[in-house]
Image 1 (cartoon, rainbow, N blue to C red):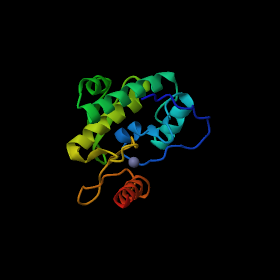
Image 2: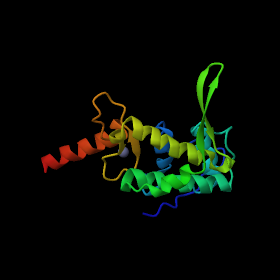
Image 3: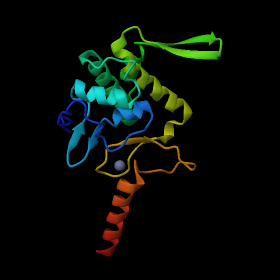
Length: 182
Ligand SMILES: [Zn+2]
């Protein structure tokens, strides 16, 4: 699929249809399909929007180096989630580590990523490991055939199928209803 979308003007709010997933999946959701493919991360302006949405606006620099690292991480996370290929993710993870410390307020974990441009990429890769430890089978792609969005199923019984019931869930049900009638 051709992901080269229209670039996003700076100062614009996040244009994506689905926000709020864990960092690793939120990074995957920078690509979406809505009357054709879109990609938030085609330039530094889009990167700035993503960093702000991800709460990383004051921890990372929105520049070409950060964007390049993030695109490597996005491809690596996609490879793990969709193709179960691991080598790319490990390459990203080599850029940092967790440093553990006992502070006055108790034990603490600090991400230690020497190259600042790799911090968002490394945090996203690390977040995928966290999800895989917690419940790997709850990392899902929306079941609607025309939707490419990912979500982490936090429902009680773990049977969520769509990124959003209001859009893809209802679209699917309406299509089934129509199919029964003809
Ligand atoms: Zn969907």
